[in-house]
Length: 564
Image 1 (cartoon, rainbow, N blue to C red):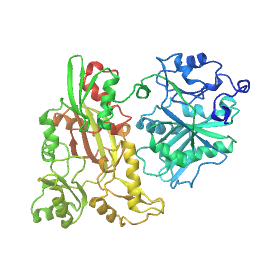
Image 2 (cartoon, rainbow, N blue to C red; image 1 turned 180 degrees about the horizontal axis):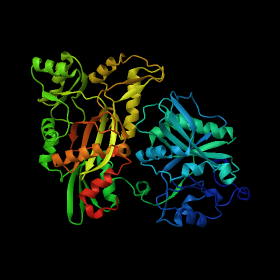
Image 3 (tube, one colour; image 1 turned 90 degrees about the vertical axis):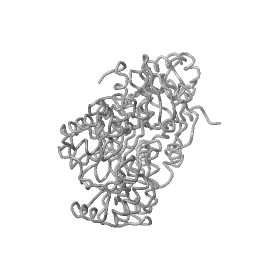
Image 4 (spheres, rainbow, N blue to C red; image 1 turned 30 degrees about the vertical axis):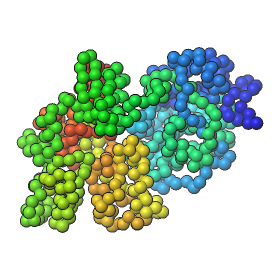
């Protein structure tokens, strides 16, 4: 039979050889080694000592049911599985890490890793943790760095059990594996797991454990591919707001998309009542203190029908904003060949879009010939009979979110692109990138395999059957819309004050309390701009870690405001 020692539980007589009541500070909370506590009473007491805003994990507990029974109102059994990799064998399969450099984390990496944690709804590490971790022999912090740009793509925390508690089993564990949801490099998570396993293997550790949510099929699939096997080891955690969704039972709001869900979660956190009206289309009603407001995602009853219509029709948006002295691209209605040719001659490169619509439907960018323009107009008319032709303004696509006439978030949006590996075709790379985007956005973002994608691929000198060289980048969509696979990158801290002022002036001109403005800018730190359009229902979930949901609920229910 397999001994208890093999499964990480406390073996008979091992207590004398292990450090008593061992814990490791992992930045987001503590890893509590349950097998080092002499009694379930002491262990239950230790778990309940969790600091505010942290997320402690107690693992390797001989009798988790007994520990929970001592404080059933405060403790719960985490619905996660534990997987183990035998390090003498190492991960299975060949590594895939083109364009990725794995290295030890440095103190200056902490803000970038925390940004990724927040974008994944994970608990960020405390300030200064990365510097402190370098002095703790039980911790191994790694980051994945883009070999070309130097950007941080992900990170992972490793714990050496021998250094932490003199573990006679010679074990180690993996925690807080995270990958930037906006990244385009494939294999980042796998590369981090492999690198951590290699480092612990070099130290002579026998195995590496990890804990993963029971329904995280994508992660479980990766771990099983690498040779991890499930073992009967369980976690006990403290009941707190961070862990709430793990112990409250079935989720009655699971049908809402991410854009509605972020607002519902914030409302519930404040004690505001929530009634889902139509989950599929994002409709819900909030109620508190005799006041009720119906919303469709970030569009609420506080946005008037008039304000909404001003954003819905791009021609009206243009008249109002240019009338307020704000810059917008030159524009004409789609008309006869002569007017189209003259407009194209004047600007060289143009955009065709339906006069009304959203999510980038029917929009064609960077058209340079009369034939391309006329074909794009015909396609745009499938979405709206009225079509406009617009000057193409070069620069970065910047989204600024204004709530209650204050700038809450700003981010650049980049068109969907793929990076070659020397093996897969463009079509296959697009398919793989789409799966990553869908996983990162709850199914809201994917790259369509349509005529527009094929046009963009051909404009880049490739076909769907082309194989890109390792590291070669190909833009496969011209618009940066998130629903067609674009990525978003927070720029709030770098936004020029003039651009913030422009967005607030535009919101006041439209008389709309919640709005997302799309601008083309040469540089987010400069003051040059052109407003492209206004969105009356901006996707607030796209801007984490900025407090978009908090400011939205502040607007609806100011009496529940908890701070700035």
